[in-house]
Amino acid sequence: MVVYDKLVRDRIPEIIRRNGDTPVFRILNETDYWTYLLKKDSEELEEVRLAETSEERKKELADKLEVLRAMAEYQGFSLEDILMEADRKKQKNGGFEERICLQKVVKK
Image (cartoon, rainbow, N blue to C red; front, side, top):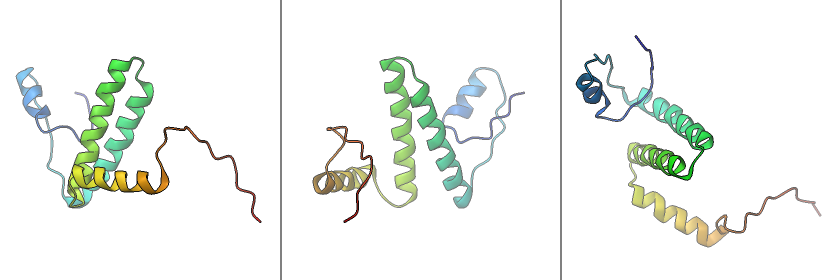
């Protein structure tokens, strides 16, 4: 037996059954769902960080995007809403293309 206690994609129990094993799971309530989404987001970020190849990074970034989509929907937004807000913020404050690392601000 392996204990996970983590949010998984919807078809994972079906895949586990197909492999001949028995999944034990529960459906999260509203409060727990948000908590587990936040943990899943951290998990996916770590997997992006540890990915060694470009292809692995692409797959992990796709997983992270799916978590972001679920987080947005939980909060009542679509992924498109989030992308539009990101575009507005980019227009106002810029993006990260110039790779600027702010070291400090000297106050007047």
